[in-house]
Image (tube, rainbow, N blue to C red; front, side, top):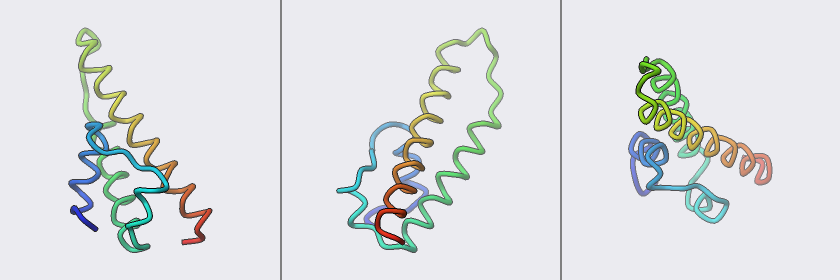
Length: 85
C-alpha cells in the first residue's frame, strides 16, 4: 500500500483521495482489509462527535465526511464482490 491505511482513510474523509476500480487494482487483499477497518473506525469516531445544531457548517462538513467514507466502503465492497477477494 502506498500510504498507511489510517492516512488513506483520513484522506478519503477529507476528499483528497477517491476510490474507484482503477485505483483499487494496486491494493492487495490484506491492504483492503486494513483500509476498510480504518474507514469503519473513522466513521465511528465521526458519528460520535457531538456538534451543536446551530453550527450548520460544521454539521454539513461532518455529513460530507461520513458520505465520502460510506461511498468508499461501497466501492470496496463492490470491488471485492467483482474480484472475489
